Structures are given as C-alpha cells and as structure tokens.
Picture (cartoon, rainbow, N blue to C red):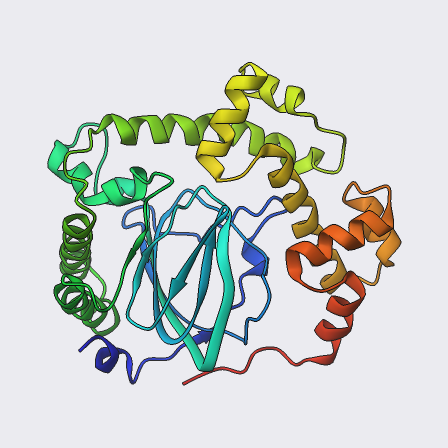
Length: 321
C-alpha cells in the first residue's frame, strides 16, 4: 500500500546545501501555524559520506528504493526499503551510503510542539518519546519485516494520501496530524518507551537551548582556535561536565564536531568557489594543508582535489519521476 501510494508522485532531487549553514544546521521554513512537512527525494549514488546536518525539527526517514547506511553521530544504521528511521536530530546525521538503480526516500519533518508542549498530558509526550529517549544501545529503526511495520505503513499511506491529495485548510491539517500521530503510536509501541518520563523531553529541550548558544558562537568563530575550555565557558559548564554533556547531545566529542564543521565549510568552498585548496584550508582553520587533506579524506573518502574534479565534471542529479 505504501509504495503504491507513492507511485505517481514526483520525487525531487535531494539538493539542500542552500538550506544548511556553516555549522551544519539545516532548517526548512515551516508554516508556524502547522509546522509539518513531507518531502519526497531522489538521491544521487552515495558511495561516500556526504555532508552531515543537524536541526531542531523532528524527522523520520523512510527509504522507498535502494539500500544503504544512515549515520547519526558515530552510529551507522543499515536500512532497506520500507524501514522507518527515527532520526536523532541534534546529532550530525545524514546518508553514509545509498545504493541501487533508484535511490528514493520519504522524509517527514515536524516540530515537537505539533504533538506535545510542556502543558500537554503525558500521553502526548509518549508519542514523541522515541526521539528523546534514545540511549547508546537504542536501535532507532522499525524494519519493514517487524511486526508493527504493517500498521505503521498503513498509517503512512493514509498520511501521504491526505498530504498530497487534500486541499489546504483545517480539515487537511487535522487529517495529517491524526495520521502522523498514528504512525508515532506504532513506533512507540515498537520501541516500548511508554514508561519513559516526560522529564526526558524537558532535559532535551534544555540541552538544545544551551547548545544553541555554543552553535551560534561557532557560526562565526569556527575557523579560530576554540578550545574545549572556551566552549565550556560559553555554556557555563566545567570542562568535564561539558565534555559529557556535548557527547550525549551530539554523539561525538567537541573536537570531532568542530573538525566536522570546518570540513563541512571546506566542502562548500571547494564546490562553490574557485579558491585554491590551500586558501580553503586556511579559511576554515587548518594551518597545515597536508593535515587538512588527510582529515578531509577520512571524512568524505576522497581528497579535496578529487572532490573538486568530480563536482565540476558531473551534471546535477537527474529528476526522478
């Protein structure tokens, strides 16, 4: 049913660079009265790690055609068509691999206050608990062969039909929200997180607000020498507190995150400007070009020179119908 509902819909090329800032924050301009969006994307072949992103919105990633791996922080999640991945949105995340003759996916994104706010009853929080109660051993995926995949797919089918075939208005919004809540209900049943306290949500919101100060600071200062002590001072924590706090929130150490921010910016400069590789390395905070080349290849599985040559030799991804 799910795949049939998507058969005649248009999948647009996955082009989001213009929506991702220097530090990897990825924001869609959602309707403040109904902060909910479904995107259907066709992806280019992904055999190397692409630029990762993070955001405040909640997100579900549903591969429709193709197989691969989805990265969240240091965690890699293998996926197949019909799986549903609950994205840990504050962690740097994105596709690590995506293979197949066609590579298409459904992405559902919404702000948590669409479902729950601090004055809501606990039952509302339960529906978004999979986004907030993830632990290191947590596997954030409902696989297509799992028992609750069929009812989740049924709800997704109704959601897609409502979203793409209904006219705008309160009735349309109410239908989309009802079917989204049904999808979330089946995910919550699968992950068995109903016993988790609402305090988890409050802690996560406090964590996001606190880190926002640091992310804003890094927006302009990422190329400077920013030590762990400097970062801890921005969020008013001791170094030891900060290191644990940051790793829990983002899935990586602060040094690894800062390096990724710099490399993320370097990726854009290499593909959007004619600056030399040495100039790019210096602009993003690397004084040693050979070290920059090494770290860039570790992250993107190709050297800066190889990326630039590939980028300029290939046409943009073809639109898939």
